[in-house]
Image 1 (cartoon, helix red, strand yellow):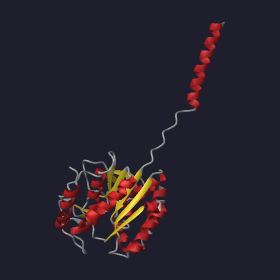
Image 2 (cartoon, helix red, strand yellow; image 1 turned 30 degrees about the vertical axis):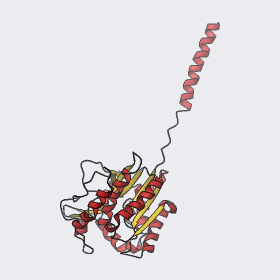
Image 3 (cartoon, one colour; image 1 turned 45 degrees about the vertical axis):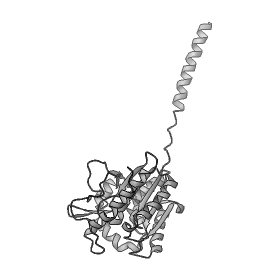
Image 4 (tube, one colour; image 1 turned 30 degrees about the horizontal axis):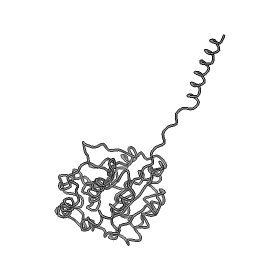
Length: 281
């Protein structure tokens, strides 16, 4: 009788344990909150990756943004800053997470050391898990400069910090492209699918830059809308660039601009000593 009672008790405990496992499955580990620093040259460059920024906010990450220039070539600096602040309000980025360095538009190459120093202070304070910069694509020389700066920043941050890039515009095979990264075989392009909410944010954001309306209308007319709607916003891990070589073997966007044309030799004259001074051995 006693043996029978022991068996019944043991079987009951087994069933109770199994039931407990079914009723209370292991909790799914919470997604680790990340800090992400976005670096832009001008106040409207964030439009290239605004859906990704909004998605980061939605997922509970801490988003920070820094602008290297004041954008004063096309509108007063205070106007341009307010437009970017309004866009960040739209997606929920706290105003104290925004950094406006204030260097003159088209003056990045002349101020590489100062910009790098300012951004390094910000990055060491934030300690981001990831840094997003414009791609090295030859579209605008201020955009391109953020790429080697991002590379150097990551070298000075904790191991595991990632450097991502996004596209503004570029020339490839004599075709002007907006929001399309240059083809690479060594890195995979990722996309932020534009669901209804993110698409609405993308469209609303475009209306927050009245000072840039003429330029944005041209860029929107050139954007591959089918690809954008089907795939979403592109970004990827920044490849290991040789910044002393052209991003493409053809005339670059900033070499063919109607206004403020810049030769690649100007890029080399500024970026070569900058890299020699700051690159880690």
